Image (tube, rainbow, N blue to C red; front, side, top):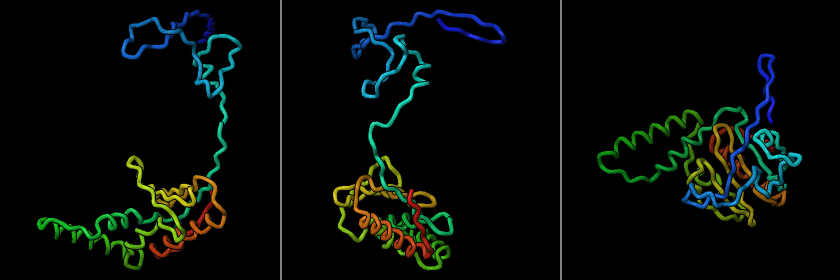
Length: 211
């Protein structure tokens, strides 16, 4: 039984819910499966309904709590002047470096690359160090370089003492996430290494903010 109100009027409606069954895959007309009741996945607990059949309102009012305690150390490393970085442009040069172009494309590609270098030189005040960009996410401490994930853009991963460290390139910052426990001294070295390289690459001061 449900109560409805509108424009000062009140009425009740009773709707019998349709049965929902465990469906045999590939045969939606098979009604021999076990009848199931509205609920949430068992590992998430249960809806408190006082014994009545659950509705969508119960799901909307459902409260949940985290089952795992995961507090990863995270940092934002960005320019002190808060201007957008130019890393995406340096990345383009890094990708194109040493390319061997077909004769009909060589001149246009070389012209494009020279243009990018000139623009970055004007922005930085110095010529871009493309090789330094390639070492941004290769810290001075022992680590394992992990392969990129195809579905992620601008994300790099390394592993230090069995812990994954993820770097995500964003417009204004590098988001660094330590996905586990590492000694504070190791984390400090990772942060300082990246901050120093970014400052040298872009010829400007970089600052660190811990989240």
